[in-house]
Length: 197
Length: 166
Image (cartoon, rainbow over all chains, first blue to last red):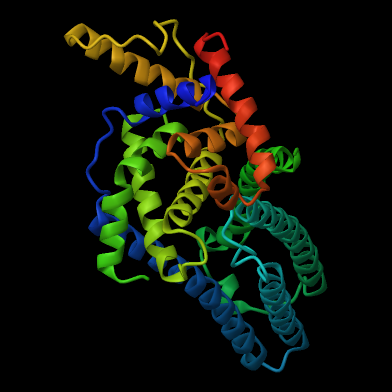
């Protein structure tokens, strides 16, 4: 046995010394796991529900009155929902499972997931910009006509919501971008270290 | 594999090792328990996928390390615990004072390991859990000679951190 093995054995003895030997609490683990799955299901349900709600709003607008402005608005909403849903499906393809179970596979899939997050943020920012531009164009086009009297009758508080919502979404996207970039930098560093030898 | 009794058995058999592993990633004792729970959850999810292609030990450590890495990266920081200037690791004293000193040496070893870069920390903690180079290679998904190189460097870095001469 070499000196280095003796050294490792000394470290091993110290490493194992005084460790709490109780097993990890399985019932807690299962409860949290179940909560995690519920969160995932809720997130998916929320995405689907949002798409359905906007599609219903678009159909209601189209069928409300035979007005070309409403038809354009409704069709625009449906187009946006379709583009966003298609992007979501495309962007999440191939990142559900790592190629294997090793740490290397895990790092690679984690890097790819963060890249997809950043791609989603870029898409979200462009999406919000285009949406705003087209909405403003639509408002300019319909200026002077009370195309939606049902909405213009609402109080100012309700009318502020469509303006506040995009601002909140952009702020959330920027926060997501910051987190994703931080994580990606650390993951890339880990990947470089893994590629060293 | 994958029923509840298998899961309980794995947690019983590897509970202490999982705590030690969690300690090498998380210095805060409260958060360390959370990390052990996260690892247990990851194992519960992963066990049905275990087909016996590798040993159960390498499978458990692979899942645990992956979960611990997520824990570190989600927190957005790398552990940089300071190693104090306490006495070094080969003193065999066993009186109450000796036990206290031993506890301090254990803490110091933990802190020194946490201060290592993650790739060194991984090979070293797996070696301390008595995994062979082949098993470590299987856990980390790297070649066996890469494990040997990394382990040599990790031990060198640990000696340096502990102020032990080679």
